[in-house]
Image (cartoon, rainbow, N blue to C red; front, side, top):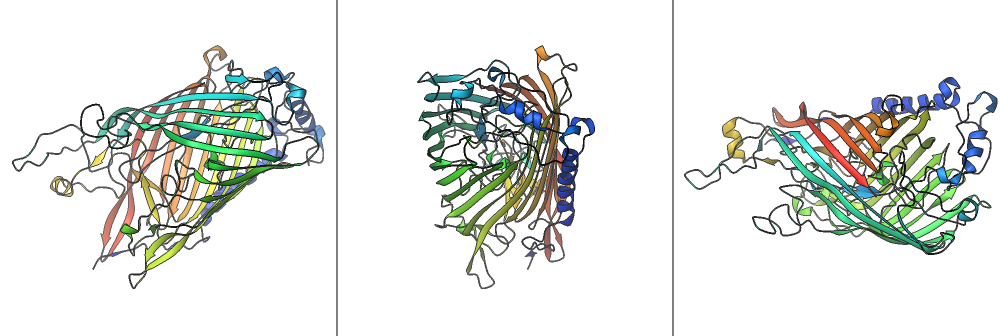
Amino acid sequence: MVEMRSDRPWVPMECSHKSIHYFLMIVLALFAGVASDANGWDLGCDAFEDRSASNRDVRFPRPLPIPDPGWMRSLPSIDDADNLPEISTIDQISHLTEVVENQSSDLLLEDWSPCRSGFCDRFGPGPSAAPGGSNYGRGMTILLDDEGKKYIRFLTWNKVWTIFTENNPGTVSNQSQGFDAGGAPLEKLDGSSLDIGLRRARILTYSQLTEKYLILLHMGINNQTFTGGGGSGTGGIGGYGAGKKPQVFIHDVWNEYSVIPRSEDRALSLDVGAGLHYWNGVSRKASSSTLGYMTLDAPIFNWPNIEFSDQFARQLGWYAKGRYHDLDYRVSINHPFNVDASGSLNSDRAVNIGSDTLAYAGYFEWQFWDEESNLLPYKTSTWLGDRSVFNLGAGFYFQPNASGILDNEGQLEKQHQLVLGFDCYLDKPVGEYGAAMTFYGVYYVFDYGDNYFRNIGIMNTGRLGSSDFLASQGVEPTISGGGNAQPLLGTGEILYLEAGYVLPSWVFADRHGKLQPFAAFTHKNLAYLDDPAFNWDMGLNYLIDGHRAKLTFQYSLRPQFFERTDGDIVRRVSDGSAGQFIIQTQIAL
């Protein structure tokens, strides 16, 4: 009998020393940069005083905990509130399915409130330009009073992808090939594919009629391609054929009440709310704004329950969020969606099982430099030099008895789902010509049950050929399926790093926008796989008007994993990689 197992059992918290060392070395290097005076890395008290005089999210003047501010170079001051780099970066999450099919997407935004906690009295209802943007102004905002404390705001955005994919081995063409003598459809291998699709199309509105409460509603569609993403029940031909008429649905809806409003007179603030919400724990990326990405998209594993026990990275629950001095916090208690895959229970790897337990999540972030707003949950990935941000964060997600596996006697063994995240974010302007650097690193530890494992394929139009056809062609398929599918996450650890640099204005004339080259790297050490998985991404943003209007070009390499028999043991090993090139157009209003 063939045994399916890995020779590298993963024990919770016994993580790869190399991954931990790499992450710690990067964090220490950033701390060293903060503490040095070389190349203008430092921020003095004057910088914070200047920014506090013009920033909606007031950072109260105070000295930094550094012994001698005299040797530090302060940031340029901002002279008036009309030039504030305020933002409203919509963010999205990703919706995806397992293995061959995929739908992933989801969004939202870094927030903007015309006036929150009485700050309009001091600064007035300033503009709301996204990072790097120019003439956005207040956007689509209806002010209901002269002070700007009552308002309704509307946002809309689209992301369109043109995708060139090197397909996984075993992928067959979507082009009809006719039928054989027995009436079975003929198949043809397809080594590459081209597609254009709607990654995200969204509309969001939120409102405050008093400083004490806020309401938000967010709707849209995701991942419409020529083969999938259509509404429920679509297929075949005609008006409701495959991929047509995608279903518009609610992404977010919540009510929020301010218990301890933000004020200059107190260090603590506290807001509480309930609904289908995005106040996620674990990491910064888990609450990322998809309109503020530096790379083409999120790595997806930043949403550990994506489209299983959540709805586009959101769960129904209660949350609390706020600040205490420079500590930004968010915690939540949720009732995850009851996704029961117990029909596929086995003794090889854990799967999601039906569960009525509550889940607990939290994320805590110390903001050393400029303060980021937390009116809404959405975190931008790059400020494009509009702010100087250095944050360290840590978070968690835990749901008991959410996974299951069969024990040696064939009985269900319930297991917990736990993920921890530790991250570091740096974004700051460089020099005097509009250049800026961005770095983000995060280290995840997953324990979702013995050998828990998931695949994914984002906007995947590829399908795997039949086993008989592949055998006749001598083709070995990957364990992930056809098209662009690949390993996503599982019990084990994941290290993710990304960095980018906005080129100075003299490289590309300001009136024509800006250029931002970027790169990302992922290392996955998962218990189910016998080899580590590596992903590489590299690309360029053409920022026509910051994140409001931009073109993104990205080339990505994903690993290929195959099942290989070694005696009576089946191993899942890495053998080669496949590429994908995507051009994205993005406009947000």
